[in-house]
Length: 346
Image (tube, rainbow, N blue to C red):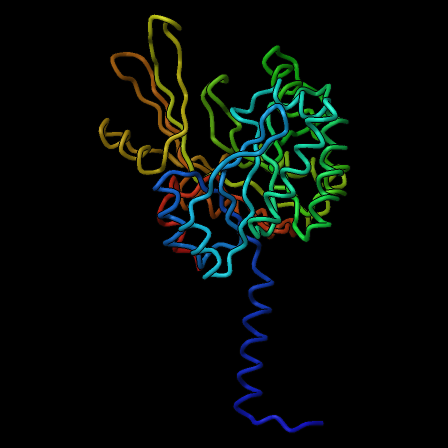
């Protein structure tokens, strides 16, 4: 055996230990937008991120991909060893656009070629689908489209993953709202078949409540765990599952305009904005142990407003599910909206 000096052996051991420690940590994917807050957050915290996925590319109904990624983000990712896996989405989550891509042969072929060329020509590590508002009638077409795109990208030495809207079962539910959201947002994903083609799934266990629902948590812990258990029971391997975590909060308030009239409006806000809303009204939020998040409700001139907050405590509580179920890692929407304290974790 060749003699290796003691100092060199110790240095090699240190590198090996660091590598093993890195592999034991869950893979941290953070989404980014083109906004300056998102870019600056990535630049400040790239050393805590495994994959950055900017939502900057769209594919139109002809199958043509367009978009632009901030060069600062790419350069910083390369310098820090962070993988760059941009999102490709149907613009505005438009359902007719997605339907045409899936069923029109020319658009389908062009989309697959365009997505593969995007990854290859830019030297990206992979692509992530962010195709949402797919009608359940296009379920099989989406599965086969994903398989064909994965084959094309793998041949180009790129990965393919997908951000997938979660569900807790295969039954739509008992109300018209539940039927609508199942048929148009949740039901079109064949989890087992998709997992067989994809390198991994980012399971978007957030947006439990939306602008069209009643007020409620961004991502209640019990709902997240039910959705996670369902995906695993469908045959998605834990090592291919990245748990969706929210870094944003939700604010619900009454609104009025001449076109839509009076209504309840719910919108995503940053942690800083949510806390500012509460501070202006002199409100202290309450921790909900079951949902693992803070909430507040109060009246303004007799009409209630609601805030549901995802802060560092909530982030940590839900992150524990990754270790509990032996998952690949976690996928966070979105850089720039987070409680700064999430970066203080050891």
